[in-house]
Image 1 (cartoon, rainbow, N blue to C red):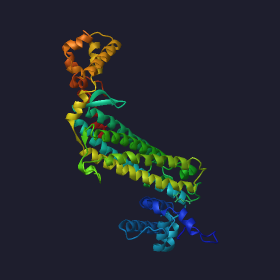
Image 2: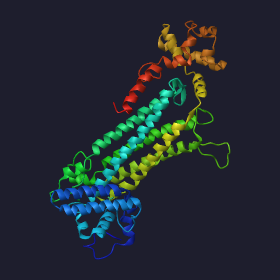
Image 3: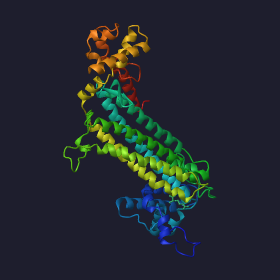
Image 4: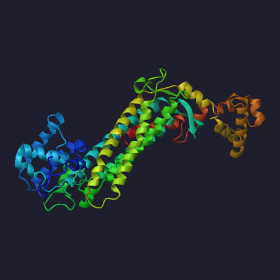
Length: 460
Ligand code: ARG
């Protein structure tokens, strides 16, 4: 046990208590942020004349060396330290002696950990954004290639109206675009520096908080020292945004699992992203999609866990807040791997376009268009709806579909049907006539795709 405190104690901490209290096993992942924060702090202390330039230089150099040694594996972060902050300080003192003891001047682990977490989460917000951008590029690529890949669109998982693969993927483009916007919002709101808040009431040293904020790439210092050490709102927002990313990925996975089933056979997941069965030789399972869908639960769990942890915490710092780390780290690792694997799976997935079009042809996906055709012939929509309803019933009884009926059969139901009905209810017409912005018709889709390109190129 190497701890930062002890002066007021007469007995050693019980080992079980020490272990229960320690966070080193998981907060060691904050080593880079912890050292960057310390380096900024020391630089500011020298600028303010609280440390000499020589002292600050020594500390800064050794912090850099410690980081290098940890990253190269020469120095191991072990359980003999309570947390990453103690590890760094203890090693600094071991290496440069008394000067190292000045590092913690005007600082508390409360503002230190608040800073470390913010720096780490800010990086993760950026990483998630980059992963989402890559996914959007893959989605957009598939959209461009499939403007005329017809497929059924569903409501209630019942065939509704024909659409295209480009249009279907376009829905996911919107979802993941909103996810990126959420990342940008969070980043903006969280980008204030808590360093200098001390334990809870600031310090008596003349710290320059604007300066450390600037050194660490923040927009400025936080404005209340109690809130600074006890705010984890940004983390809750991030977990909520990650939960939404997972919800979107999970919906997409659910569709891919359906599309990949023997019944649909709309897609084939590449062998490199599929798994087999130990007993059934014929099987090729969509395990990756199922796992992404399944892992959504643990990300939601992290959000619920942190909300619950935070809800009863009086101001300011309380040790409960150490519980923010494991769940968040797990959620972040989960989303990172899900995003990357899902993108790879999507990139390599093949479409059975003939089956998709065939499926769009049956199931009366052109019934709305048949009704719209009658409206074009002067029939009020509600009446047209009724006529086509009877037409569908007739087709079901005869085991056929609207476009396969003879003109006599059609006219037997309504004399408004003419030869041009066949073109009006063809798959191509049903899709291509839908030209309002947001609809699947080619021209409408091309406009939207151009906007998506501008967005991904950073122009909008
Ligand atoms: N490991 C602690 C955490 O994650 C660091 C802050 C400890 N501060 C304290 N006063 N005990 O929250």
